Length: 401
Image 1 (tube, one colour):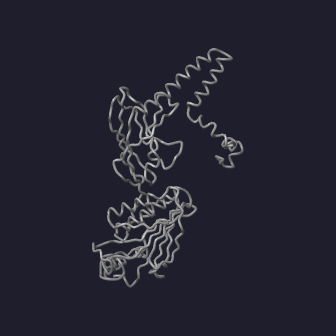
Image 2 (cartoon, one colour):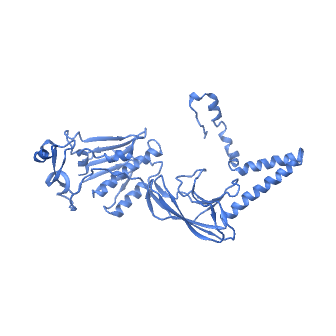
Image 3 (tube, rainbow, N blue to C red):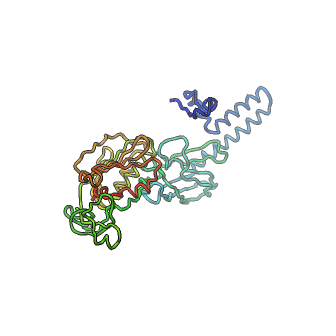
């Protein structure tokens, strides 16, 4: 497959000529030049030719380069084999963007210090040739067994490590990197980032009746309290006495049923790119976490998979684990059509990177703005602000009430 680094047309033909790979089929023959050792080997071969046909100084250069290559390859090879490394996080799970401590256990078995050890591949999402070190050590004392703690911040959800981590060393010259797999590792689950949703279903009581009137805010049942008027409230619910005292419109809140049927559909397809799917998953995690905290039973469909969890701490962890397991590049799933008699929330994406939250509430009438409302969160919009105001209107809260 051709690799083309396209430049804008306004930069001219010369810029495009300098940044285009015209012979991608030949790349496999020059991959060895990615490591500096390849250039040293090439320089050594040229020095030998100079010594043979032109001047004896070529032999001196060849000997010097050979010595540098021997030391630059021998010491990293020894360093990664005389040490025993283990890597594990202090916690089993964290959210995206949250720092956690990784503990690197190192045992140096020789009476010499070891410099330049690094751990690669623990927090990588996929296999690439340019892995960044997760943990690096300047020096390990001789005949030492020690634990080193370092702060890391995962940026993408998933179960890490995806690939087997490796201990690497390129000291002293950095011309060649020796690698060795690490088998002593513990996994880290990275959950999607969760944003707080404000004004979501104020719970006054703690009763958990399956049916009937309770302490959840609604428009029928026993009196619960009062609150400011919101868009979608009916005029017949205005408390005129309280409104006259506060010089603002106040409505009466009544108890609604404690448990309802709420369907949540989460699209796991990648409509734009990896970051757009990540934002879509964060929105889903925020909505489901808020519903879970309000003890609202939901029927969740994550792609083609039904997701069932209890309304407790273990259930919340199970729900976040399922969202974290969504592949970073998405997975194929059937498009779920609306039309259910129950209130539902559909979370999906679009080709331009926007996140679409569709609220379908058959119980809402024209006064509340209709039964279906679609909230569009742009690709550059602040998710924290967008999620905080997700339930601004009373008709949206009635979906889960």
